Length: 600
Image 1 (spheres, rainbow, N blue to C red):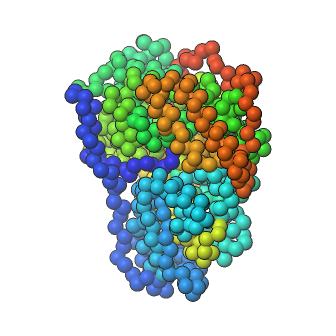
Image 2 (cartoon, rainbow, N blue to C red):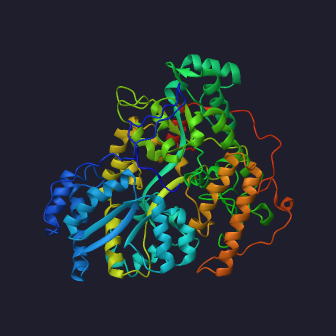
Image 3 (cartoon, rainbow, N blue to C red):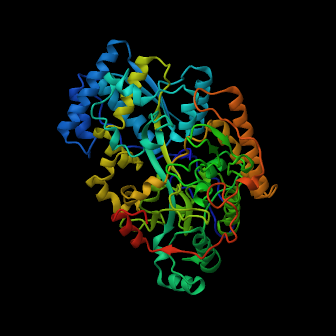
């Protein structure tokens, strides 16, 4: 996704999707307030007293002992002292507004200042604005901020333009003095997503979350519903393994069950308003879930989930349209768009088609949605609040999360879905002392001393050690499968936009306008995807003409689309049967598979 595009909406937001058919306007977005920061100590007060206070009062639990935490924070204080001696007293960084980053901005920045003496102005803005400001800085050559938390979706962009700092070389070269000896890069679970075709890491993961399947486990467990479903469809009501089963379950709840406790129940939830967020609904790997791309992790090779083909080495994009060997307008991509529209119109609340991402996000928590195929785990914190219709009296959720089902074109070894990785990003030609200070702060908010507490606050884990901690084990029963998912091998098949995309900002903006005309019926899904593919090719042709620092597009000439459509690789030729028999799995069986080291 571009990460969570709306700050977490409170449970008070209610969309009336029942009797009258009208919805209230949603309340203004408001994220849950992070824990209050401990009482202030004098800024940079030798580091030691401040560090002790923060270790005892805030940064518990941790995977480190208090002695190890003290040693790590002393390193930060000592490193910062050298930068202060060079005149660095304040830095400015930016991120989008989600719970994790609010905790950093309001609590961790204060801790960093008190321990190191360097003040941090950590701005929180909308994610689209982060991308826009990044673009402006790249074009001008002048970075507006000293450090950025930007989606790893831009890794292909950063590498090709040559404006972003290569962290692999920085940590062993110019930045070695400012690199925490205890950083432990191998403990980060998302570094493969921030690594460019040259094998170098350009971004440091700060938070991440996956896009999974969400369902009401309590409803799926009702004996009368299980019996009714099996009698009609011939297989068990359970976690869908394929899109056929998802569609059957959606039809079952919307058309057969119809009501639960006197209120309408819907088998699907989505959004369809002509708005930039409609693009994220597709670029966040919807096509990969259908099976549009080639086999490959983290992304299909040579054709990725956007349908962009590259040269065999993954360096140069050569086209998005089938006529150039791409898959953006292939049968699998058209199928994915068609199912998105059909399901939204047939099985979701009628208001859904007029909603944006931000308006649709809170709806499942209101208790009238049975399942959702496209659901971000970053919603977890707002789905476990006591008093919600989807939370039991003991605080455990009535819902669960699971791997999303696959479309008929999907094959083993393909990307399963999307995972967001908001990551620290720095401009290589920016003031080196400011970059060093921002790099210190980036390491501080991801350090083992602080990261487990941050994970508990935002539920966007980045470290293996945190995921395997006792604290997360203790929290697991109330998180609906989040801990089990991140401890399973399944997590590696949910990945961000990869390196095939040469200019994320320019290409991403093409999606929502083309999808919108298919939603309204102004164009057929095939015509909409044909136009999208053509516009993507035009952008990449201009990039080829202008040149890029690394791996610029080298566009294939247009040819006969039928020459490229095969059953051996993307673009995949049209299947004779796009709806095989539905398949499901019991959730407990899925959990057992995860515990035994299997994806399913």
